[in-house]
Amino acid sequence: MNLDELRAQYDFSGKTIVITGATGVLGGEIACALVGCGANVVMLDRNLDPAKGLLDLMGPGAARAVVVNGNVLDVGSLERAVEEIRGHFPVIDGLVNAAGGNRPDATTSPDRAFFDLPPDALRWVVDLNLLGTILPSQVFGRWLAVRGEGVILNLTSMAAMRPLTRVCGYAAAKAAVSNFTEWLAVHLAQEYSPRLRVNAVAPGFFLTRQNRFLLTDEATGELTDRGRAIIAHTPMGRFGTPEDLLGAVLWLLSPASAFVTGVVVPVDGGFAAFSGV
Image (cartoon, rainbow, N blue to C red):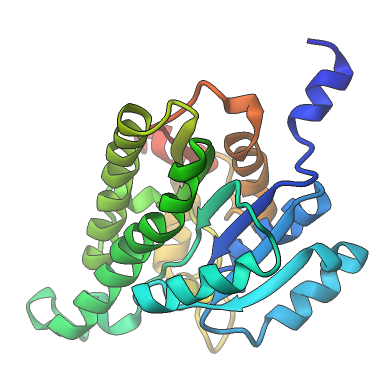
């Protein structure tokens, strides 16, 4: 493969990618990167307030981005989003399931025992992360299956590989997302087309709106004990930045990974590889 052919692998011109949770920290970074690589991007989210800022960051490429309201837990909302998207782009080539998160009342703490975690809070976390990945994969995956070609990329977590203290609902849900990634990869390739691929990235510790309360002290901005423990167990000695995800994301969405399906790629600064000794 010559240099021009290699560069073409990462040219997304004319490709349309739908991103759920696209106005979040990680989803927004992925949206900007894909626009920068020439893609048409559909930013799907319930919270559209940050979208204006993202469009500004995209510069002239924002002409290839559309913002669509959609609830990943409501099939009707997702189907309405499909109809709106078709008004802009007749074909989609990929789906990034970036919607997810945790909440404080589903997290154990010195003041909140596991035995007292509210079922509604746990259900919210499991639904958002697991069903919020499965339902968009049904609605948009059907569109890909009709074409017999396309890519689904899920965002799971390091908590799926090594259950982390305190976040029992989140860790269990992300482990299920990893399992679902493998299941769907096999199902689509065998039942529909070998050109349908499903993979996931497992971010390590990135500072986001959902986990900042666990890793930094709100009053001082200093690391919490948990934050310090994470850094001590991350060989690269830092939290990830949203940009750190982009290499793996672009690879898994591109033709460069045409023979890769059913994998979960850690992007974690070595956290999973380190035994602590």
